[in-house]
Image 1 (cartoon, rainbow, N blue to C red):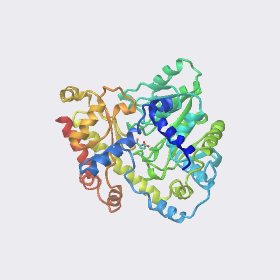
Image 2 (image 1 turned 180 degrees about the vertical axis):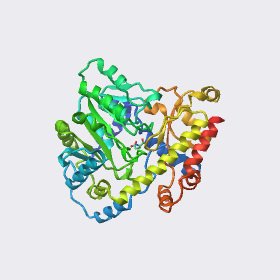
Image 3 (image 1 turned 30 degrees about the vertical axis):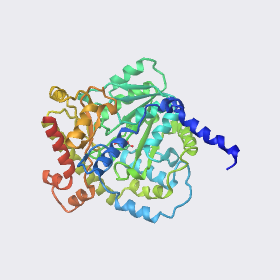
Image 4 (image 1 turned 90 degrees about the vertical axis):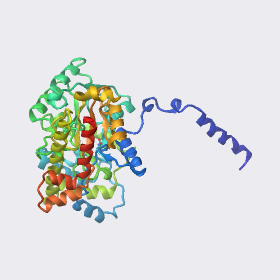
Length: 440
Ligand code: GLU
């Protein structure tokens, strides 16, 4: 190497002598891995050390990728070309038929934008829309950090256990009263993560009226819609058509989180926003993996095989939700009624004195002790925007072999307590361990 090449080495060293905090974008400072993904990696590391861990941290579907999707993916392995930025036209058309069939809503393929998981699309919408983020406490762990990364102000809506810890029209009205026409993006998640709440049509209509009055942009996160236990998920778009974007994908109801495929459906009135997002997409992820897009068509087309898969998934999750609620309530926790998805959000407040005597006064301490002492991985309420000292946590009742549970139902087994022990044993054991530990 020539002598004059030496300075570059010195420069490289110099780069590392600055404090990282000086070189990082202000908005990202202090952010670690997203809580859901961090607990997953920590659980895996503990298991690798030989510890027995109930993995109730990350919320991913316990069920297998439906055979019909697996076959379609094999058949499309050869698809090699970049696809249109907005997504494969045939997939967008299938999504329109899905929205018509499940919600009786009319969309054209041009209204649909496909993304690498709805999470990325949520980031892009916050990037291109210049408004405050409005979310209930508790909310999914990533909405607020995305806003923080982008430097958007966040308004947390207070919630109440009586209304399932969800958004209420009253709380929304109060927030909007201060600066009524300020641009705001409200995210509504039904059925919800972390609470399992599903909004009633009446509640959606009331929220929609406030949203319309204040011209809010409503992002309706319906990623758990397909696993609402009664099979009757209703989209918020039915109540506020012109201002609602539907967000959905195949991660939670088609066992395909790792496939990374989500979509947004826009009303015509928001075509300008869709175009801006497509522009941002074209400069970042380009388009979603071609084989995955081709294969995903089968999930949205539905049909008897998909329908049976969905019915059985809902039945198993509904039975597990009942079991989790009943056992933790018996242990003394307050548990919100769970209407869909695979989460419970128990609050151990009634046990505060006993837990405080054992050194736990925050949700972070609660989850840390639960993991260390009982081997149960969960996430603290504080990761979802709850006050640090509230003794709430989120558990995802997904640590089981969903394929065996679906096979059990297909073979005509009765969905009772024995079924849950047989097919969802690790969850049942984990909940038992949590309950006994809390009763401690
Ligand atoms: N949505 C899932 C959860 O809340 C995990 C996926 C993610 O956070 O990216 O656990």
